[in-house]
Length: 254
Image (cartoon, rainbow, N blue to C red):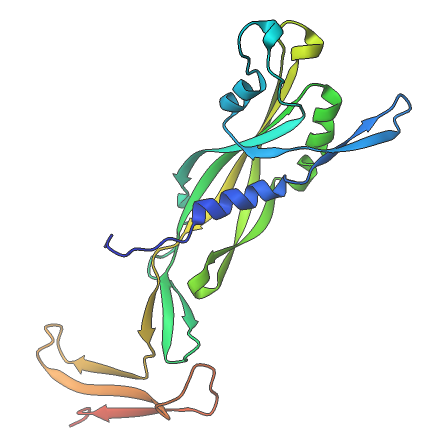
């Protein structure tokens, strides 16, 4: 079962789609009259919280030789977990089918397996006003979810909705030494991405004729008759309207 090589890039597509949502957030610098003087785009990167904080605080040698700190505000995000979503389970026998360009075969794939991907988004600022500007540009879109469309399986041109749910929002105000120089306000937004993992695809021909044997007993030892049905003309393609079904009964009533 596990000898079919395939890769749809599901996790990567979900993480990229998630990051793109927050890639163009900007904030304004205001003067004493609350008039915008400058707009600042908030940089976004994929990075664990602790490693990002280490970069912000990175020093080399004594305090007076401290390296230039990463300027704030900044944002980062990371995938923190993944788990099976039993509430969205569907029959494993369902299939997706697509007619190939040659119209002689179908590309098929069995129903996907539902999973939840947990992602945290971190907002780092030095002052409360910057944090509030960023957070207020995010929260209104999650009530409590936002839907994106992801091209899941190129072979089938299959797209699916990716619900992104905002589960929780927390913040902390950390500082070391001088409040002005070292203050860090950190907001953490926890999200759930409801995605699907698709198995390998395969190609199969069209079923143009079906044959059923009917027996008189459950041991299948006494054949009662054979019923068959086939498409006419035999070269019919999916979507054709000028077709007929030819039925044949053999052995019934003999």
